Length: 465
Image (cartoon, rainbow, N blue to C red; front, side):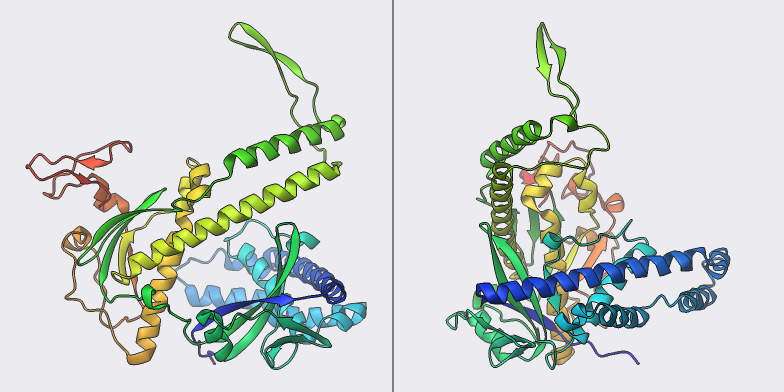
């Protein structure tokens, strides 16, 4: 039986936590971290047994065309060594009861969610989506959640309740987004903490059922949009409007402050860990002889960190956090501006990961991957919401002739029987949109040449548009 999926959104509410409550929360998170690591270790052991089993090795020799036979055989191999989500639930329960203090700190639903989390992490390795798993250290284990709003971590009478702990929220009722979330049904609750300006802050994330609150200015139009994603900006053309929008506009990079803190941390590290570095050496730079710092010795894992180093690292983390938050806010405005002109998107199939090797710093500062994923998420959610509401489908007669050269070249249209399909991606090799002029001529250009100058007398225009 397949469970019916309903639309969901998240409402985040800050919590008012005193010192005694924080001490108890941290002890529960410590118990949750140890249980998660134990489940993850057990899942990886069982995965290794499955991979080395004779049945698994034999089924890998079957041709990929025999999908049913391969699927059934893989399922038997996993059942043989109890590598499944529900088997890991049983392991989590047994481990918690054996440790006793873990069972006292964490309820059964939270234990099952931790086991599910560990299983999904190991499953990513099995499916080739990740190379390895990461075991959690205290600073990296920041959230726990329940399975429903009936028991365990739950939202009750406008408070977060977890056993005997009752945490009061800080609610801004003048905020329509928060008010809408509090009035919507709650599926389950997630408890998490973040470090803001050197202090730990606690939050409750309510996973609500339904559609999120939509601000009047952030409406979504029922139109067709053509996109061209770049490292620092995005070009879009709708039915009646075209624009070139920069990513993370007017966002301070804090680069000077971050560089200064990095140098301070490096000096402190060298002063307190002389044995971990190779000796300095002289090198020739032009006609001058300069002294270069020795590199880090291989295999050195023990590092002494002074209080000044930890303060500088905390300041650097805060600057990087602020930079990321500002960039996300500005990029969400870009997404909302595009969706005002249409939600049926046609764009090139671009891998932002491929850009990272060559344009690492620019990708980090501008976050084009976030804009791409956010656009896809919001466009498809708008299509799903429309389909669930009234079964509506895209209007196939709405075709943008300025940005629809992809359509003219035989690329797929949106089908009327797929109301949730709001994004179509096509190959960059077959279209070469940035090299093709409006008259159809294709002239190869370098990346630095951003303007089309047509030989047919048409006015100059930006190649992305």
